[in-house]
Structures are given as structure tokens and as C-alpha cells.
Length: 223
Ligand SMILES: [Mg+2]
Ligand SMILES: [Zn+2]
Image (spheres, rainbow, N blue to C red):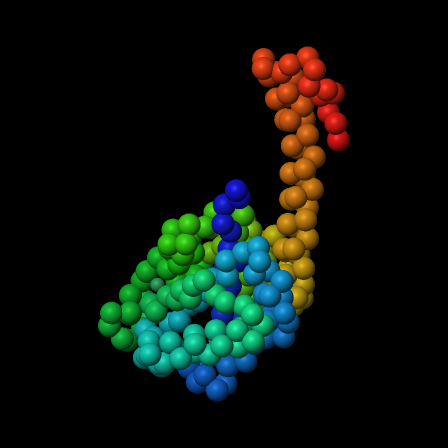
């Protein structure tokens, strides 16, 4: 059986419109196509949010308020029959003013710490997993963890700092969330196809080499 794979999802600007440091659940809406697209991906992948929440380190909101936002997102996704397997966030920032979050860390994207932790806790194979985000820091975190990556090019990335940073080059640039989902679903079909044709020679080889093969077992290859 194939290992479990995940789609790691950035929150602000990817799942929901980016309202900086918003912790009011009433203002949380899903981005266009997110619900329908995740419903198509959910049978194939664990869905796990990976989010920088430096608002905690700056004291703009507390963990209880963030929990309400998480609940709201889960409720909105529930309308589409989609459930998240995990909701991971980095509460840190080196310039913050709230102990214990005001410090450097290895989980703030572009670092891959949160993705690695989620993968360990959910037994996820990273090489078959994806990170979807709206800025290149998401791409870099995903690539550093060993995932394939998609940038949703919706205007939120403005610096395009990619030179000398191969990890910041996404595998695919999508115009919106639906295009990202379509790309992943097509990749699954392609993998299945490649898997099917590469399995044929191996199977023939196995039969040819088998010392237990009786002469009356019919043709080597019967469709
Ligand atoms: Mg974002
Ligand atoms: Zn952190």
C-alpha cells in the first residue's frame, strides 16, 4: 500500500484572503475554489495547514483567538465535506515582544520545521506530498522538507527573490487554487500511468526468472 501523502496548505492568502493579523472569525472567508478543490483532493491526501502566526509574538492576538479562527476555517470546509488532519502554526518572531514567542526558531517559514513535525506526527511521506502557498517562503519551506511545491500567483508575492535560491522555484505556478488542484490531480494520473508501464518489464522479468514456473502455466504475458 502506498504511503500516506499530504497537501500542506498555507493559510493567509491561500486558503483564506490575507487580512494581516486578523483574528476575527467573522471576517474569515474561504478563497475562491478552495472548498470544491479540496473536496476533490481529500480522497488522495491528508490536508494540513502550515501557517506563520507571528501575530502571537507581537501580541496582536492570543492562542485562544487563533483557535477560534481555526474553528471557523474548519467549519467553512465542513460545508464541502472536507476535514483538515492538522493545523500547525509558528507563533514565533525574532522581533516580537511577547515571551515566550519572541525568539528565532526553526518553524517559521521559509524554514521547514512545521512541515517536518506534521510529517512525523501524521506518518506522511514527504516526497509524494505538496506545499501550496502564495509566497516564495512557502515554496522554500516545502522544497526544503522534500515536497513538490505550487505557488498561487495571486499578487501576494512581490519580491521574487529567486536568484541563487533553487528551493524558491516552485514546481508549478497556478493562477488560482483550482488550477493548483488540477495540476496535482493530473500529476496523480501521470504517476499512475508511469507506474503501470514501468511495472510491465518487472513483472515479465520476475516470471522469466522464477524457478518455480511450471511449463504448463501458459504464456508469459497474457494482457
Ligand atoms: Mg500566505
Ligand atoms: Zn516558530
